[in-house]
Image (cartoon, rainbow, N blue to C red):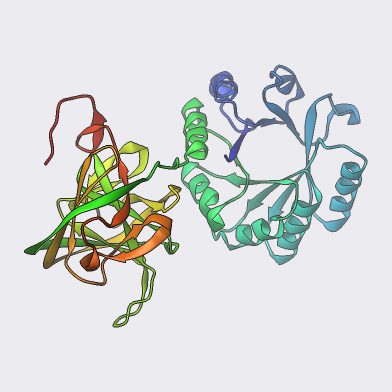
Length: 368
């Protein structure tokens, strides 16, 4: 999980108390302020970070001092404090050019905490600092101007910085940031389904999902005709004899089909569009959020695959009737749908929830 540092220095006076209460309640990692008196009132559940030099040169007990680092000499001084065992030492580097970028990389390697902020909107400098600090035990925190930038920071290089520093407008920003940093896609329990029958249906409309990411060879999407059962459709990552691979694509199924997504929600394939969020699923059940680049809806011959879970739950998937369309089997084996026969096994997911507009509901519903 990523962590949040809340910067109080620019929070309006009439919002300060609410922001502090929200930060403590949401269990942010740290609160940053230039006022020692404010920091002294905070509980031990949150780190207290003093921006600027401590009063009278004395560091209050339990307070992390955030030192501005403008050059190599200042970094050497802060590094010396760190080497003396002062784990409560942090550095702030303002990256405005190549020398300051180098300084940020060195600080990220040397210090327990390094806060970086960037003059320019490009995230390439952040990528460089993240790479430099990758093997360092210290923690990298990047300053964000707003929640939208915080999301971009979190996604940089698929791992982002460990922490995000944000000066919130109000308490709502605190809760929104913490929720954003908490956002994870849990693993799913996959079942081994047994094929009952294969049927050629004739012409219909099918959807290819072209995403903004590369799939791993054992990844795909869970697609099915019913909201209670899905089959794991594999991406076009694996070589084909008559066309290049499309490692960003899932030949998913007929347009009526459900695709299993985040937060235990389903979407019709026909609803997806550029910018939609979908869920990539691995053969071991791991998941991750990915983004749709476009969908391709085209008329093609269709094939109906009927399967059954060990508990007897019936699952159906209707896909393009072509050899190059594939699903995943046990052990991440890649299976061509036109070669499936009764008794073959495929990977899928069985859900117990009924659905209304994609959300799980506790009501009577039969699908067949």
